[in-house]
Image 1 (cartoon, helix red, strand yellow):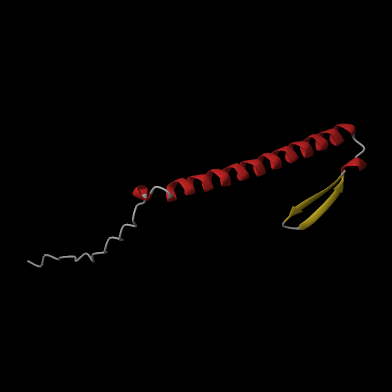
Image 2 (cartoon, one colour):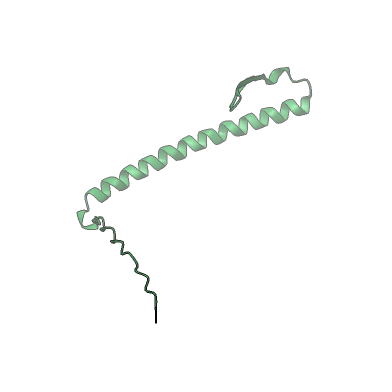
Amino acid sequence: MIITINNDEGNLVYDVSKIEDTQVKNNSSVTISKIGTINVLIEALNYASQAHQSNLETLLVECPVAKVDEEPQPEEIDAVESTDES
């Protein structure tokens, strides 16, 4: 199995099937499998999140009562320092 790792230094390509140590080979195969599963879960969560956000936007557009107008920014007041010269 050929694996490409992308990092700041560029692309590194490894052939896991060439690893002679059985334990290291098995550990790398298990880790590759875990990474694949995590990537699938991330993609599924992103898809679900986008769908829920879209549904929420649709619901809120249909409820103009819930819309909050942007509040005006408070004006800045320059503080005047008073010195007591008595």
